[in-house]
Picture 1: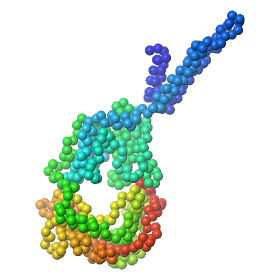
Picture 2: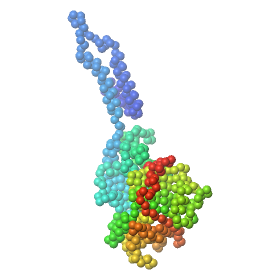
Picture 3: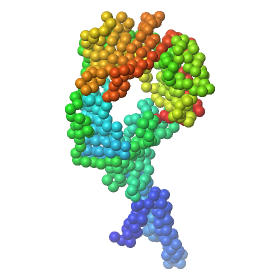
Picture 4: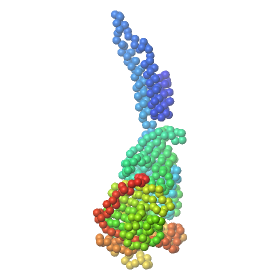
Length: 549
């Protein structure tokens, strides 16, 4: 190695682990020093014109000119080449992906107890969440899932439509570099690359963002990779609002490993082998399918423009709701009716909806939701008399999910049974069932639910009875009854009273029930009859702490 090669190697050795700014400055110093050394030679060493026989000076030798120019230009070209080399990223996301896909298994263990395994050869995926929930899926569409509260394993497909999406070499990789919890329809603004340090070791970090509906850049995922192995080391996933509140943390951090083997089935994730597998995608029997079709048709015919005032009867603390619907636009507000000194007492014994509406004007609702074709807005407000009050309003805006009617109250509750899975079966009406009703039963492990259906009222559900198997006996857990039906001018039926009986929470079931009675009043209205700003979601964002993820 000559002296110039030795100097270049020393230069590269000095800059290899410097920051980019320090490296650029070091290269400029070294190259500039080389230029100064060459240019500082005495003129006699450079300019030596020859003399002619006549004593005049001859032109400069072209060879000497080129040699001297090379002395000046070569260090400069060397400098430019080094700068171009150093400005190349030390590791690209594509290089990490390529190395990742060469592995047979990937395992990610998160600091909240969650774990994931992916077989990169055959596409099998295993997932165990922090709460014990376990999921196993295959690229052909099979999905098995188990929740610790249940005594069965549900079987369905993880995709929508008739065919599973094609499985490719990047399928598993995308799971770890793309956040599937990012709201659909939002703009992915790409990945930023940064130098970073983990445990004293130089690494590369990739930050993924999206632009929310408020125009803000939201960081949702960070991935760290080793420049030497080109494999990911850690991943940080920012949790959505509900998960942040539930887990009391902003994000979870996972550590990568690349074993040669992994789980073989869902039972390896801690699921009891004695639990049966229940196909929730099974098709209903022909007679049940006919009932479901009629119920969905009646639901679709129900008016799409109305106002509903709903309140819980009785003098204990409860709730009161005000809902408006205008086709796909929906506005919902809820008030707590607890007694608070200095505030008007709720008229708990009234059946007059206007009296309830007048009372609503005396307090701020505890929660508000507005949905239109594009966005879902929600807001929580401080409420008087609550021990766990939030300090100031919190608001959130997301892309519209188009959820439709609330299935916990009429009208949605009247036909919700028609879309439940797995499908029910038709049974002989038990003793005490009113004449003319159809009874359907859904059985899922240790849970059985009966639905009393009235074909004369558009296949509405009059009663739902949920039972649990406890010590070999079926015990009531909850009963919902819809009563005091009225027929609207359009011909559809609407239940104005909802009677709720609770027998406790499984497995602590009681023989005596806790009762609630809700009253609902519906008015059909045209869009012009609704308050002018009732569907204005932007008003919910005013003076609130804003969330969009």
